[in-house]
Length: 200
Image (cartoon, rainbow, N blue to C red; front, side):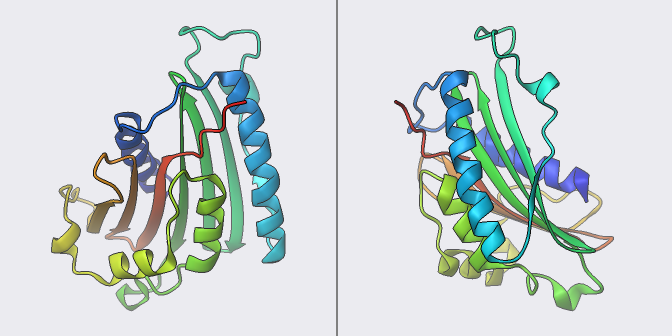
């Protein structure tokens, strides 16, 4: 499941880095931005009676005095545990002075009939729209999930995947949605792209 989440997040992040709506933001600014987003995300999470845990390795990902290309990335990583088999990860990154994010639901399914049925779209879209520079609606997510795979088959499935869909949310490919189900019935639904890119 972790491998699928990382792959899904990497695809969305890579697309966002080459879009046309990117602002140059320093890592120090991103540190402030990500702290602000995290406060808002925590409030939303607690409203649903869940807790959000920071799992970022601060030593590896943040060297406060270093603002040059030797240390090009600053990241924050959070996990919201939903139940024994389901969680939401929130990942924010400043890479080469470009801010992006992914919010990913992952779960283990009992059988294929559960595909797309357990995803908490209300919670996910609230989390996404706290960070995202583009609003994502529940209706957009439902249409994407309900659509046949061939409509959104931008990438080929790997050998261990049962289903894979991807949809770009704007022409410049700054934001996207992905849905992956592996053959061992691990499900991942992710939304990502550019943040609100706050500059002060």
